[in-house]
Length: 223
Image (cartoon, rainbow, N blue to C red; front, side):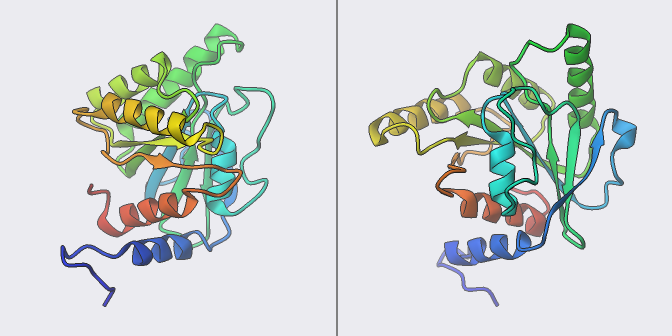
């Protein structure tokens, strides 16, 4: 039996060990989906990663999976133009990398097609347990982030905020951004109350993110 604290919850060490085991499997890119019908069967828990095009989404997915080049990183924002699927053999979870938002250099019809794909996925994927919404820790939530939160709240899609690049601001600045972000998600119906601080450069917060995802697999998505 897993060790528990007095409240009956698994200890932090146990949660993180479950996350380590889950992501010890070698994840790989399996396919890019340009329409919902391209998606693989809904045969396992899915977690999706969303965020502005320059928020460090690919770097975070690489750090999460312990791979340097799993998700392609680029100096050109907006490189992800499909729902990119990452899986590991026999793993009970699938990672979905969503196209970045807030970048308008792509032709308008292309951006509109991305938006339709994203909305169709979010609203119709029964095995999607959580969207991880990435926000730059140097700035906090921007208008485009708020817009995405509004849509997720309206569609009752569970989401959790991740502050990326948490190694960049000073300690005082990070505390202010964290407080601002906490206020932003307060009383939002679909938002998970915990904010995860991460850095793909230092590895900070990656074990906590792995633990959170392992928890979704274990309890089928309950908060």
